[in-house]
Image 1 (cartoon, rainbow, N blue to C red):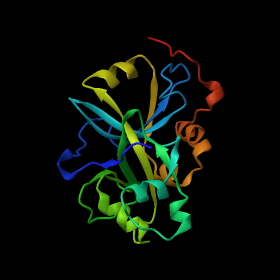
Image 2 (tube, helix red, strand yellow):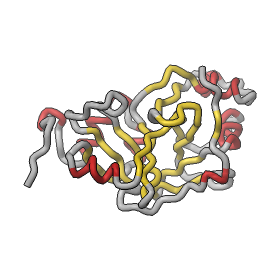
Image 3 (cartoon, rainbow, N blue to C red):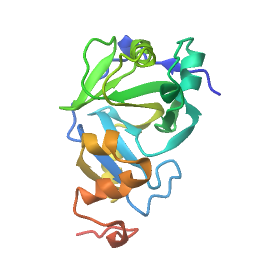
Image 4 (cartoon, one colour):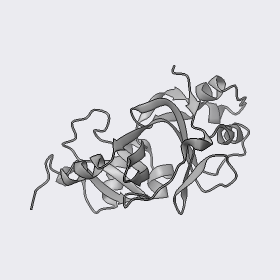
Length: 199
């Protein structure tokens, strides 16, 4: 198990680009095994690049293992047994909590009107004590793109985008999130082709 690091306050989480508050849906032709079939919540997008967290892939870890490594006590088995997601291939030792709006944590950012992301240890302590946000998921790692890289992938039809929806993020079972996100666009997966057309 990797040593877990929770991102600190100075990581300066901000959103500014046109992909903020969006979910990326991998097209069938996606050849990168890290992203094939993935649904990724965009957290940051600006001229320097983009950061997202994949929300439909399980990691090999439970929340209890993460809490134990951080020396946070938790006696609630339902919290300890919660599966942690694989947020992406970059920095898999970094933890992210995607949650319903709850203020007061050391390092949080707003992703949408009903979605926040917190990277500080205090939110995990609150979760373990049964005082965390109403809805939350925990992920390890993230997806990252350099400046202009994601825009290039979008031009090559590698991704579809849809507005981030808290139902997809928090309520929909993991195996249904890909089809559910496509459904927000009125698309069924069997209608997608591995290569998009070019005008």
